[in-house]
Length: 120
Image (cartoon, rainbow, N blue to C red; front, side, top):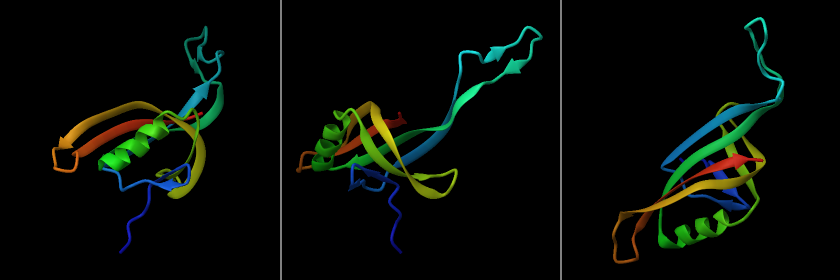
């Protein structure tokens, strides 16, 4: 049985992630908030903004690829949407990029890489 690819960044299929956490949020207008009567008013200007927190355990070659992607200002990301259960594509950027050595090997180590993909 073949595994599903969760992420494709700029045409590159990513390895199977160690963790994959997708969240959807709404963007509210400045007019949102509490009214004089004490009720909450939400003026949603954009719904379903995607944020994906992901981590991988990768080789030094993949660490280099991911580091180069981090430097790009805009990425085309095809991702598995857990809300709709289909693959969708959005423009995103990488934030909170973190690397740590998972295991020392004779081939420059196994690296744990984690980051957030935020939709524009």
